[in-house]
Image (cartoon, rainbow, N blue to C red; front, top):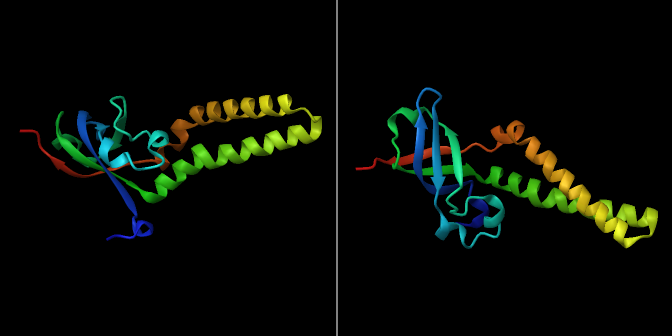
Length: 149
């Protein structure tokens, strides 16, 4: 049995939705309901088998893949940990820090709570605005494919 700490990548099965051989881009719909069901980060990750979960992957194989082909998409464990940190750990730390600071300054719990909520809204808006700048840190690769018959 493989030790959970020794896993260095995470594989997801998917179906090719479209290809753009000129740009070497393959759009894949990830379909891993069974594999992601036991993962505590499945709801946050987005790789939970939702039909709208499309991933654009830059791949030299783009010209050989066709719509409907089944592929295995791989992401690194480091990438997974970074995503969890960005969407859970950092916001939690910021939320607690802002709420404690505002409460200590004002002594008002409502003001502290509203400041925390406002800070979270601002954080996720900034994260959404920066999505194109950080997208290169979250790149997947196609490790195997089965041609549609």
